[in-house]
Length: 146
Image (cartoon, rainbow, N blue to C red):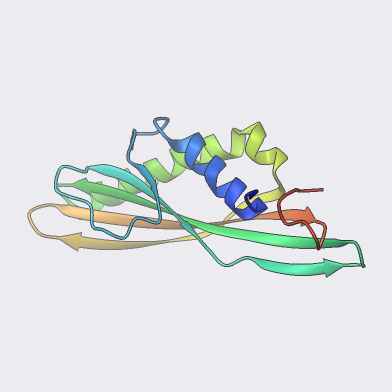
């Protein structure tokens, strides 16, 4: 069975980021487990809600949303925040420049960010960025952009 346009976009996001940022090979999808002490930088891609808006009788606009969680660890909270921000900017630049991702939809946007800290022996920051793209599809085929 073919993958939906949503899955195709998420798979491309992962492919673009894998081994291309400071997170290296630690680019995952839907990870629920906490990262370990040795994981200083990592990325987790999380599928968000997608909304569909009918356009006439033969087309739908799908708003594809996803999150990218940028994990970093450092000796101070500020250093962890700055590292998370740098990882986010690295990932964002790669995604914005990717022509294959651009061909899968329109209106690539970062809709905002939030950050959460944890501290023990070191500080961990999780900067979550929310992304959105629009894809036009036929109502009877959610596997192909038109």
